[in-house]
Length: 264
Ligand SMILES: Nc1ncnc2c1ncn2[C@@H]1O[C@H](COP(=O)(O)OP(=O)(O)OP(=O)(O)O)[C@@H](O)[C@H]1O
Image 1 (cartoon, rainbow, N blue to C red):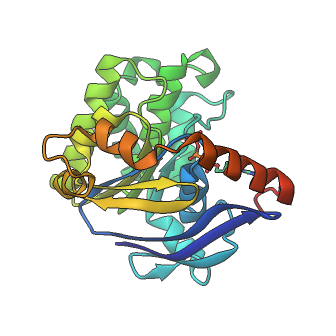
Image 2: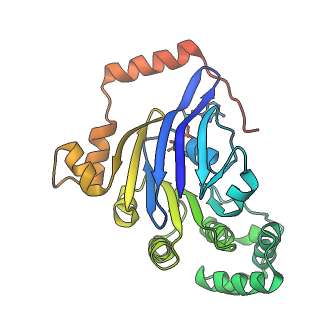
């Protein structure tokens, strides 16, 4: 469903994503894990066509992001780590607007808006301006917007940020239902390792822009040499770095300099 080959992103002389290859099968929940600054958000933004790669090929359901971006994006829903909404629209207007962007028939938009407002416990707020919503409510309306066109691929950057425990449960159950019942593919990045352990079929751990481990939980346990290890133990073992390694990396970054190049 998702194929990423030799993906690279450089900011000046700094390499944020350094030759990532990933293969995500249809119907999977796939987790991208890694410490702060590992390159997760950069990878997800390239995958959704928001950031131009320096090198590499991204293919979504057979459509290449570089040569067939509209088709690739039309089957993809994206939920960024910070809710991206229009404060001066009501929940109903916002979702209807998204239906229009995806050129969905009006009757289908009306049905989906009703279903999703209900699912995300926002029905009674349908006519309220989004500016009056709490952070968690904005996160829920962002989920509703991404799911409105029934995408084949859902890309989620840090799905649990800003959600309360009830929201966590809702999202975890929803991910399982969307993949198992509807055959959707979900690619998420997270720091919340127990979430990854509970919902992901397969994960890739990235560090300094490279994939340093990948597989199912069982495969990662074998790789880390401990059959009873939790994902947290595996993660810490794989991503830990010595003081010398850290000093060398920081020196390399600042000797080469880096630019604040922005998305095209
Ligand atoms: N516009 C930019 N210009 C320069 N460097 C950047 C830019 N955007 C990101 N970076 C750098 O690229 C690296 C990867 O950043 P990215 O946001 O992808 O990490 P992340 O794994 O998502 O981290 P976190 O878990 O903290 O969100 C970081 O070192 C970051 O400083």
